[in-house]
Length: 356
Image 1 (cartoon, rainbow, N blue to C red):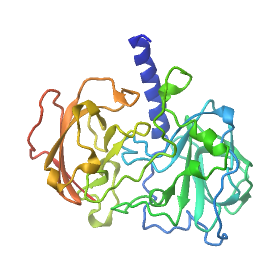
Image 2 (image 1 turned 135 degrees about the horizontal axis):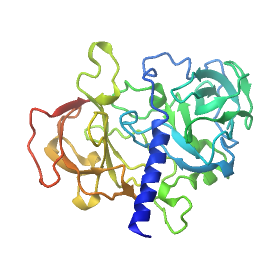
Image 3 (image 1 turned 135 degrees about the vertical axis):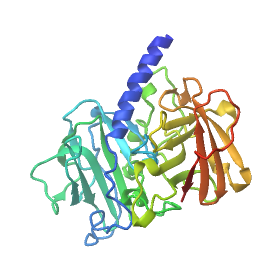
Image 4 (image 1 turned 30 degrees about the vertical axis):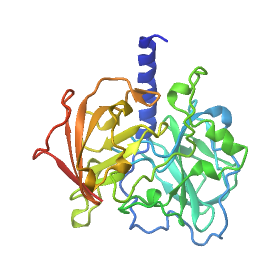
């Protein structure tokens, strides 16, 4: 394939993927000390969650972005829900399981809505960026396979599961409840639907391109990546919780991995900087964030634009470098230099401090 064609394809794929991810940015209201009533219905019986129907007809779902995608600033932290990328607009959306409507999220900036449906007293699921049936109201019962609306004004449907009994191991739990209780939606589908959906967990390069081989084995994805005593996972800028306030997007930082290629390091930062979505290439022999500890001292990462990749590997030249040092298990110092040639630098007074 000619390079010009590849570049054009990558631009189109990035625009579509970015639009998908940016379509569901949090409104900053769902934090972990908010009552759980809109998330679970304790009056529902106990039981198990089982998805018996597809959310989109199989011919209408192009591919799936699994858990753990990043797109700063709104999704600096790996996403706690998945994305069902649709082939067209105004497609029917179905309830994958029977349940009780417990909450509506009113029209977003995109003019569409979200619905949260309780299945048991500890399990619920939600669908976002859809136009809901106008007669639907809180308290209604929906049946598995019932059409509850149509696809909204974005390129995807958001799909998440909430499990009140799960422990995702976050070090700092001042997070949205959708993150604290987030679970793996695709794992709850019955067979053969589960296998069918897992086959759609593919990068954009693979769509309509049988010559592209994707065999990384990603199915559900991973969004909970905090590892005690290491760099891996979510960080908040110092002062993010001053005077009881909740963090802002620009105060977030994550050391993560590519959603489709988990051997490729990704760094996402919420700050207003030229390149907030950063990649690190394996050829530079970087230290895995999960292996960085206080004893590692100052670590240098050479940075690339994570928005321009092919098969998980950056296609552009280096754009900078990052210094990071774990000062303790819960505090780090970080500085980015837009320097494309130096092997390393020294911290300056412009460095940032993060905690968790």
